Length: 300
Image 1 (cartoon, rainbow, N blue to C red):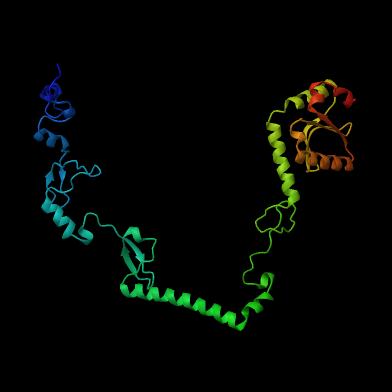
Image 2 (cartoon, helix red, strand yellow):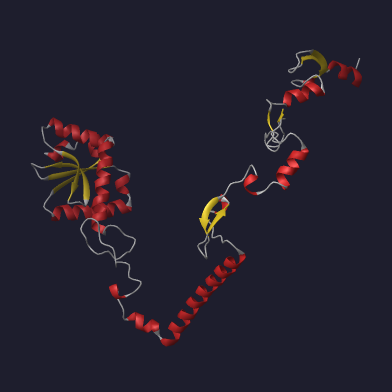
């Protein structure tokens, strides 16, 4: 048989203990954590006694619902007196700092909030300061108009380098070689930038583990008893996989996918031409040759 609304309401009642006085009371489940009466609820919200900020009388303040604040005054009368009649140095929240007027430089007291702003000691100083700003703007506009009329722009064209008022030291120089740069935002010339970039790449390559085909190449050279350098930087332009000083031989291990791209093929051709022109012996080994272990015959 279905239960009525009254029966459901009676079932919602539970036994609770008052957190203030400790007595047991019966109430609905929504009363959980609350007190048994209004009197106990008021006592729970009250804090330790403290003096009133206006009259100095001790009272037990309450915890206010607004941002967790507590009462500062014992009554509404004290609160009204403190907020309306008491002003200046006697007010409990009085804070001022010493500064100078922006116009007459007279010493004055100021609220800390306005410290970084141009504040004046009076309305007269404020009006004079505003007029001064307007005059300076107008004079600048007049000077620019006169300069255009009298042709000062043509006269300025003849003044170059250090003679010009807008001279800022000229074009920058390269940090490495001292060459004058065309771009004002640049730090290094193209050659120095490439060399520094390749040095950074070399350091990263040293920290990084070699590829599988590079490992096979290095093991083969070790087995043959050849002394070689890995990730050698040639003339600050190209980074090669292996260099054998005794044979003046450079060996490159080329991956099939990467070195089949058009832009990489062009780079490889330029690298081959440069290294041969510098007098190096060059040997390029493909990935398939290294994996088939047929590259040993080419090394000789």
